[in-house]
Length: 250
Image (cartoon, rainbow, N blue to C red; front, side, top):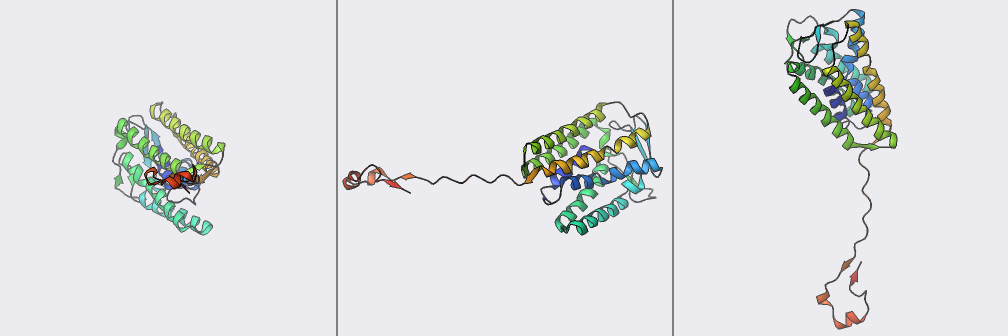
């Protein structure tokens, strides 16, 4: 899954408004940010094998340190703990923990059975959403659109750059997703690893765009004082004789 992880990060801003969108995106994609490093170090393995699933040509042979459930629980505790120590924001720390661990469960929904429960586990999990391109598109785009909508409703631009940065962030993610979805397979495993480092661009971008947006909607304009006309039927001749404003109340 790709867009779905970003959708979770965008939606989480409503739960943890003090936490930067950049930190939320880093949490949502944290294990995928580690994964290319482990690939290049030879600790984890992937193979380009078109036909593995209908959506992705990648066969994830081994990734126990970045994508096992136990490892991700540990990464989530470490990430949330560091954030709590640095920012003293318990709400944000708890939200980041859930955002990070959500990565494993969303991957379990989309992957073939290749996600280990712990390093060395013989049991692997995956519901295989990637076997259906139509359902994959529907689920991923729905999660992403929901998250983007929540973020847009919960924040407002601080300046003109705030609108541009958010819209271009969403548009580029959609473009990259569709290119990967309909495009040719990558040329090699090393190309996969180096391309995956590009996720850091969206972490930096998210920090930048969040600095140009404010939490909450703009305050409502003050109401003008109401002027009401009194019932004409209750006017007496004396009232009418007092002048045209005799029936006004403020």
